[in-house]
Image (tube, rainbow, N blue to C red; front, side, top):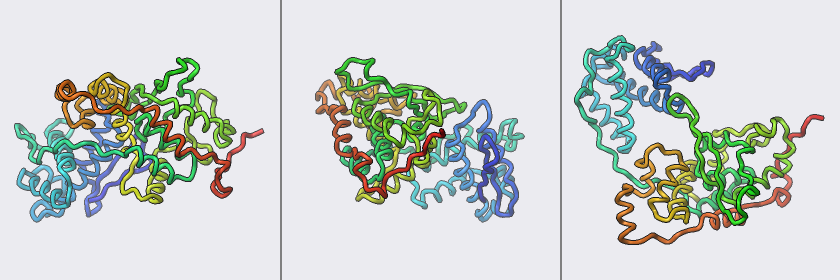
Length: 380
């Protein structure tokens, strides 16, 4: 069983083929169903569903009984004994509870769809009708993150100020890596419009595409030190000499050729820098988690619960229960604990941002010539 995604098709579509190069119709139609209205799943969600559905179909192909017939016929006939075998095979591969539950969510959604008219009523009854999930409920864990020292170490492993800037920006604002390319220069707050002693400013974020593939806008916080670093970058030769866009549409971050930066490029220079340090872990998403923890420990709110709500707004979580991973404690319980024990020591985020700036900002003129970035020139 293999998955094919033609690059020529837009929006992105997936086709599943069995080992005999025949299209697996039912799983292919299910993924197409998810991509259309009213569901309109995001591209990342579609890709995840497609991969997990491929693995399930591959299991059926290799099954002693169901492997003797076509995948579509096996899907129509499969029952819980074989599906439980599939979940045990996932466990044997070392998948964690969250991953196993993720596979079951896909299988359940797929088998529920099979009884609908859009699936041609491939099954008479829903497999999970009145049935609970059969995999263990994932235990809630604290989110992994990068500490201030780890962030500094990672940034110093990067060659160029533009890369160091972006890494600091993700940590400071807690944005997703997919949201960085949508930030415009014109989105940067003008400090002169605010009181001189203000240390944090609202920053518009064009959020990741969700259901309906609609971009949800929200506001996060950006520190004064981060804005200073941004304006240094805007005034650099690499950035200021590029005039490919009207000023109001110019991306805040450009690559070395003066083109819009892509999320994949950020992930690439991130992993390259990680290899030049002694850190054992590091992804852009761990930076986002680090930014969230920084807000939780900060002076922004009067209480920890206030900070939890600020984190929810800045990260764009629809439910406070999602944000609670940063405390591992439900919000009401968090408030009771705080009332009994008091607030932990506060860390001022503007001091943290200034510390990162001072320790990691290296002007290009101080770099060896071989490491300086060429600047595309504007046409005369």
